[in-house]
Image (cartoon, rainbow, N blue to C red; front, side, top):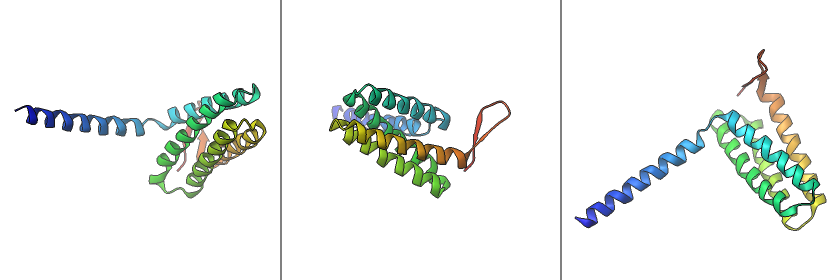
Length: 138
């Protein structure tokens, strides 16, 4: 009886974990972009303050957020958005590595390239509505 109960607990935990993971991946895109914007700003603030460890932590978070962005665009097969998300991930990884090495100048250069990837995607794939909100254009 105890073995059967243990298996039920394990199965229940697995289902819960999968459900929680799925729910996390399907959060609204505008919430994801708000997280990207806040984290991007925090990276800049930390680089400007020469707070390399904090900048590295933020850049690692940014890398994860851009992976989530890539996952959002994957079903649409929108090549330029996917490429921008992947390139932004790579640039965020470079920021992380440079900041960990206390090379703030190199981290700053990569920070600027992240902004270019963001801008290119925003220009191509979002449209401002009359109420000043944005609509995504896959």
